[in-house]
Image (cartoon, rainbow, N blue to C red; front, top):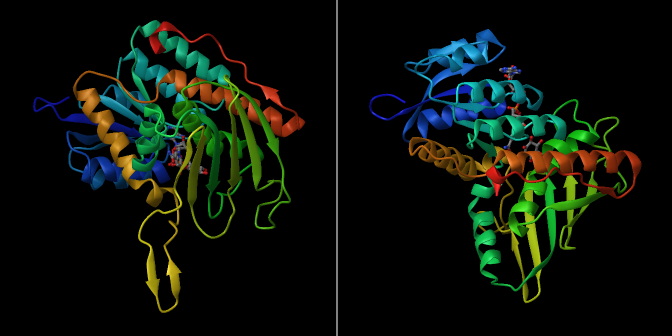
Length: 339
Ligand SMILES: NC(=O)C1=CN([C@@H]2O[C@H](COP(=O)(O)OP(=O)(O)OC[C@H]3O[C@@H](n4cnc5c(N)ncnc54)[C@H](O)[C@@H]3O)[C@@H](O)[C@H]2O)C=CC1
Ligand SMILES: O=C1[C@@H](O)[C@H](O)[C@@H](O)[C@H](O)[C@H]1O
C-alpha cells in the first residue's frame, strides 16, 4: 500500500481475463493501481506495462511479489499455475484475488487450504464472480428471506457461443460448470453430495472429442436436485439462467437481461456475445469489493473452502462423465477458519 493508501496490485497472467482485470483496475476501480504485471510472455507484459504509469513488467510471479510497490496479487494465469503462486503469496502474507478455479483438482486445492489454515487467517477471495452479479445477488437475498418458501430445485442453463480450441469434456466441468457448482452451494447454503452427467445428442458444432451439450445433475446434502444444461457451442451467444423452484413460488434470473424492444422487424431483446459483457458489472463489483476489503485489512467473498469444495465436486463430475454413474462427492471436514 502506498502512503496515500492506494493498493498496488500485481496482476499475474495477462491473457483474456488478466488483461481485462488490468484495464478494470486502471480505469474503473478506485483505491488500487496496477503496480506490476506478470506473464511468461515477456513481450506481452512489457507492452502492457509501457501503457501504465508506475507499472513494472515481470516474467516471474515471485519477483513481482517481492516488489515493494506490490501490496496484493490478482491471479489470472491458467488454473494449473495457481497453486505455486498462492503458496508464494502466503509466504509473503499477501492478499489474493484468485480467478476460478482455485486449482484444477481437489488434492491441490486441499494443499492450498491447509497452507492458508497454517497461516491462521484468510488471505484469498476466489473469483466466483456470479456472487457479485446484481440478478444473482437479488435471488440469493430473496431465497435467504424465504420470499418463495423453501427451495426444492434449481434449473440452470449455461450457454457459450463457442468454446476455445482444445476444450475437453473435463473442461466442461472444471472451467464452465464450476460456476453452477459455486452458485448452487451459495444459493442453497449447503454442500453438493453427488453428481451425474447425461449426454444428449451432440451438436455438430463441437470440436472432435467434445460431447456438447451435457446435462449435469447435482444432489445436495438435504436432498435437493439441481440440473444444469451446459452447452458451450450453442452458436448464438452467451446465456446464463437460473430458476429456483420453491415451496411457495418460483424465481428466475437471466432471461430478461437488457432492453426488450418492439420494432418493424419484430420484438425481443439482445443476447450478450460473451461472459465479459454478461458479467461486466459482476467482475467490476468483485474486484472493487476485494480492493475495499483489502484496504480495510479484511477478507470476504468466496473462500478457499469454497474453491476446494467446488474442486471436489468437479472431480466427482469428471468421474461421472467417464463412468456414466452417479458419483458421490468426497469432502474433507470443514476447518474452523471457514465456518
Ligand atoms: N471468471 C470468469 O468468468 C473467467 C475466468 N477465467 C479464468 O481466468 C484464468 C485465465 O484464463 P484466460 O485469461 O481465459 O486464459 P489465457 O490463456 O487467455 O491467459 C492466461 C495468461 O497467463 C499466462 N501464463 C501462463 N502460465 C503463467 C504463469 N505460470 N505465470 C504467469 N503467467 C502465466 C499466459 O501466457 C497467458 O497470457 C483461468 O483461471 C480461467 O479459468 C477465464 C475466463 C472467464
Ligand atoms: O469462466 C468462464 C470460462 O472459463 C468458461 O469456459 C465459460 O464457459 C464460462 O461461461 C466463463 O464464465
